[in-house]
Image 1 (cartoon, rainbow over the protein chains, first blue to last red):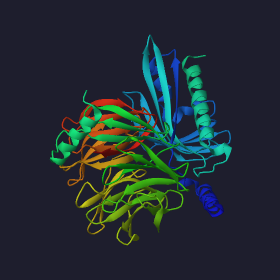
Image 2: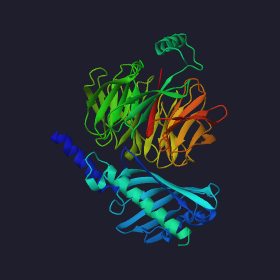
Image 3: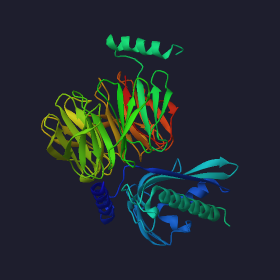
Length: 177
Length: 316
């Protein structure tokens, strides 16, 4: 058992040393919805601008982006504790939906090793919108003995808080308050 | 559908023995990682008939060649569960340690092959005792395992090695490493006589490995393919695409996409039924299995299942 633990610890260390390769076998999910008192097209004008997340997400201090809203576009987000890089995969203006992935992780900034996310703005009627932000992701340390700050619970809590803060910011911005 | 289950099973057995290939009911096993459950779907009824609770975090599943057992891996807990397929209940759980993920059964001997995601190796287990009988090293992060019964070979999609390992089953040795796209994750080695299909998650393509010469042809144009399955009796390859939220229907000869069926919920595992008429796709985020009609190339229905469906396997 000592040997087995050592091997696992080394494997975990390997993941930390080579974060670009980090990817575990067990994904987690998070989904947050918000109703916004603004027309869907107006909300989409904000949320559908891949490079513009810094205008409404309070956690995002700065954004450097390339490629506009075309698949393959990238954005580097400066968060409080460091940078992460997102890559745009899907952009469907008619459906008011975009999908992206984490191209370069930073478990200090956000304790996940990889995610794919979608953000969709739906018409809730009466001039209102319902925004859904959902993601599939992997804990920061994908070994079997992750420290508390890099386990599944930490990843779910962080992603949920990240989405909630973002949608609250989007709501505030879109409602002009 | 009001038939007694045993009577129905007996009837099905007769149909199977008679060699009927069309429209036969089958059991589709759906592994739900978050729900710690394996659901059994009756494909005729398009409904869940059994819900089997298993240990935490089940991921991979393989069916014994006789169809009487299903083997389920638990990477986070280091466990392997054997399910009694006839009784639809857990027969036992053994501790393997490590991160057991991909699993396949030997079509001839019944031996079970289990990949260890973080130890980069495949362990062979006795199908009855589940005791280890051999180990072979592969590339980094073996994900899916699949057998080619005719050639007596095992293929391992080594996700972080960007390659597929080929293992000779008679000697249980790694005889080749074939470079494919980035992050190979899923395999179908049995459904086509000449090629093995490999889903390359990160490079967004499917690699076709020639069984005879190890040549590689890649079909691109996908976002994040997570499942592959050849359709029996048709020149058709199904590819689930998590980030495009779709099922691609590919022509493996012309190397082109014939159709794209829009799905939802991060599609992952994909299975074709034996008649080649329908495809089943696990919609991971939505906790559903989508049923796609391969004639009309459209969504036929959706079946609610347990939380976090990923891998699936079709039983008798």
